[in-house]
Image 1 (spheres, each protein chain N blue to C red):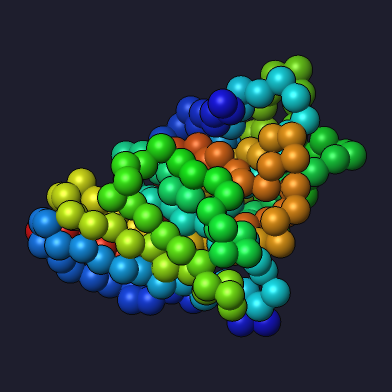
Image 2: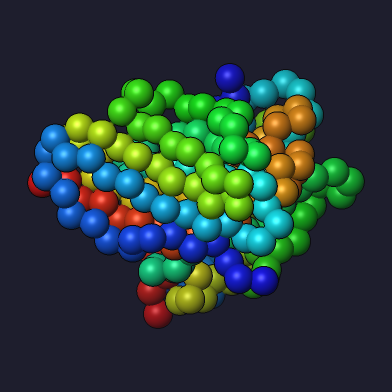
Amino acid sequence: KAGVTQTPRYLIKTRGQQVTLSCSPISGHRSVSWYQQTPGQGLQFLFEYFSETQRNKGNFPGRFSGRQFSNSRSEMNVSTLELGDSALYLCASSNAQAGETQYFGPGTRLLVL
Amino acid sequence: AQSVSQHNHHVILSEAASLELGCNYSYGGTVNLFWYVQYPGQHLQLLLKYFSGDPLVKGIKGFEAEFIKSKFSFNLRKPSVQWSDTAEYFCAVTTGGSYIPTFGRGTSLIVHP
């Protein structure tokens, strides 16, 4: 099976702009989660989508949003970018069962100038 | 809400040294425990996990972890590290019926020859 893919891999934006990141899960996985990884904070959970519905949400401002399509592909959008949004954004897919492994993509590294 | 603490943020070892990375969680109910590893430039991937049964879990590349319920701990061990073990290590926990893990802040391990 192909792994989780994310596009783009690298992105440079300026403050105030918006950005959209894309994630394609492993075939058959209906759950897609997004995480923000920074050196000081580790992995912080943004939100999770299952069958096109947001089922779980972390403690991030409303500038961070997402959606999931019928083929389970997911997008994450960040509006009005701030310098502190610079991070590695990871997408993970799973079978959505308790104890199941999360399978991570390579991430999108976002730099906000 | 559950939380995960990794006490060692940076660890530097020589090859052949023994490794133990600490992980403690705060949750009184049923847990599933994970260690993920992120090698330089690679995806975050599962190293091992505890779901039920034998509290001593063996993973890939000679790693093992022991679940001690009374101490709320899931420490990662390896008797003899190699240079190729240089990576960032994340402990994670899911609780109850949830499949969304809470991650610790990670431990950066550097092994020098």
